[in-house]
Image (cartoon, rainbow, N blue to C red):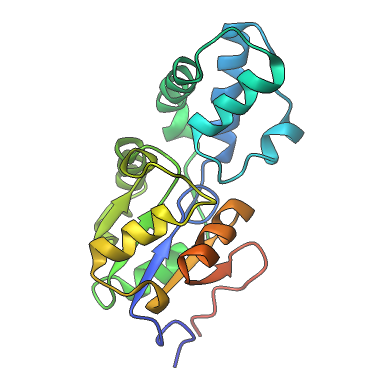
Length: 195
């Protein structure tokens, strides 16, 4: 019996959990920064793992005292990402869990990426058909580390939150899962465990 069998539903983060799209996001932030006349470092970018684009944009505006609306900065970054994302979609090991349980358990993707972009990424990687639901940043008012994304996934899957298992790679996501009352697997330090 797999350790996942005890759960009624599985919820996966996208970036860094199912797909390694982080290089694409970083490239998009570099392009955005250059276009607006500031710089971002890779070390800074790695502190933002799991943070929705709008929150990262807001943080940049505040920390760098930029005279830009965060929503404008975020929209520019997402446009840049849309242009490069297909070159940055390496599948990660936990996609095998999704493949194993597709059609056997309700499954969702809960991500800080906008729904349409997340859907395009999953479709390009030929993973979209595995999932019943995709909940993106535009579907909730409070983002990770708030529990709203994962709670919305559970609602759409018609499963009690405590019966859901979340797969995540970032502290924002771990905190969101805990706040939702869900167990969480840290995909960075855990083996897939399907044998």
